[in-house]
Image (cartoon, rainbow, N blue to C red):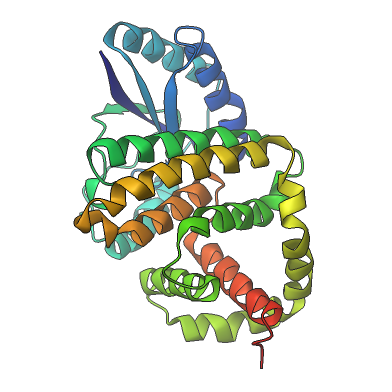
Length: 301
């Protein structure tokens, strides 16, 4: 019987490079044991910057994969974290812990530290039973795509484009709100997280948005053609297939029916997380999309 296992792997260097090199190697070597292995990852901050890697495998293969991970980390460069570095990390994490309403009971870990922890699904965010199973499959599709995108030479300059493509895919099955309402609501959620009003963000970002919006409109007019070929097009098709099945399951449950939009928004957030996009950047992207759609629909003042 297969179970989910989780490793928290700490690294203080270039996380994009770490993902594209070492996480990729771990997955490829693990797939030599199980070709159709299920896995996904997120980036996280508690205890220091790290990857939370989840892999579903048999108990026999768990010990082999565990050895693969420890062996792979021997190839990672050493990075010394000074006392002052750790103090700065603690200060930053205190702010993040307050935003997320979690206890500040974590220790700052050294570079290359590996901590095995129990995988605890977030049932409130992603459902239970078959609904959760599909969520985990969607996480896997997102992780596979983001791993491919992060290793591209053009990733840094295109990561907002990748985020927008993800955003537009995930909201395709939401027929409760208009796209503009969805972008606005998403910006509000993360501005509340940052404890700054969305109006303040709009005021501060107005010049930047005005400068970039024409390029985004041009991109939006062509983005369906862009997605037809390559890994993004395949990812979108596979993801929409999963979302369609999940939406039907959710529709049969009054409890989850009211939460489907929340589930979609969480998919967007963790997809952006895998791309290394911070909440403040998510606010900018959603406000940029909101303005672009207003112009496209002839609603801009």
